[in-house]
Length: 119
Length: 424
Image (cartoon, rainbow over all chains, first blue to last red; front, side, top):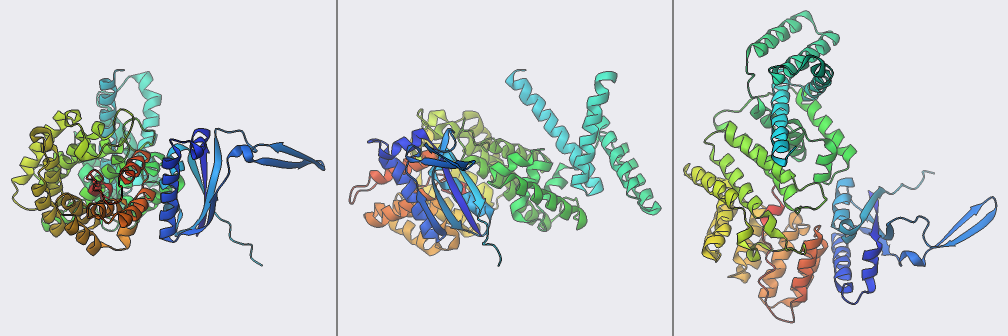
């Protein structure tokens, strides 16, 4: 079964990415986590995302385009990256989600991937 | 209400709840039905007690009300006359027994029955004996709350429909079945162990729940050395809880903990239990693990860790109670004096179960680093860090790895408490 792990991180965590003091620990944690997933052979796909301020949101309302800087929702935690993993069940997906650095600093949303529509 | 009063009230409520559910379920063999009937009785109590005053024996009042609810439900179910007669007879027997008997031991044995899936035994105990709700149990076991609720319902239905007997096994059967009960209690403790004081994970106090169940077992099975051993083991570990984090919230491994922060009272109680357990003169897994913890806390008195004693006890544990946890614990005990032997033990145990077992990787990394095989050590440590859930432990391990130059040795990376991370 495929699950998407969506890693939500608070701004303070995202700021560590290029912080002179904290960057090593931040990336060390993530690299080890991704390495362990890769070693387990469960990764289907996945990436980190550039920080939320690089986002642009587009909406079309009544035929009019509305383009805004920044993420869609102004919440405390923002999507920092995602992985799609192939694991037997939700329990296993939750185990892996809990091991991610984002689980301690923010939260991880875990959702089953919809199977392709039958034709 | 002061903290003590609140705790006393909670304890009283919990004892009453567990005893009531156990009494009702031991009679009806239907845990879910007993829970519903008791819930209705509590609602009735909230309605009538404020008007008529609290009865002299609230427990007996609740038991009678719940029993009547169960009886009415059986009537509604259209039970045949003969069966109804038998039920009446047993009801009367139950009513005559006052104070009603403590059936919680039977309930514990049913929850850990071999016919019940091992993964649900601990949650089942926590819910039926202690009254914990499914959401809290689900969080502790890292399972979706809806899924945990369903599993608990299924397990209770299995107990009812398969007609599992509410009884305390006797003779040889007791030893085998008791092991399952103890394992389920220890699983609750292990789940709570990784949580730190003040952390909002919601699992920290499962250790307290496990200790409560451990005390209950010692009380209900007086003189049973393994029950004493398990309670001693949990108390030794719990005694060190506040020493596991420094002021800044950083992880402190066992061999660097400030022994003055350990709880003297819990250690004294644990020593007493261990002494009592050892009088049985036979090997017990939990007694052995408690003895290992006793060696660790001796450092608080002697100022040093007796590695030879640890190796000896782990040899014994690995021989009598083989498993990933005891193998890795043994290797962690050897790694300080003989990293090559530790590495050989770990490699010999390598299997599917070790691939995702963080303590195996930490211990392996430590052994490799001690042998100067730093590149391999880094790989192993990186995997360990990737498997670590606790942010403070992750930060500590990253620091340990940073401290490895090209061929230096670090002794601090030992997987202290490693065997505790996998209580099953």
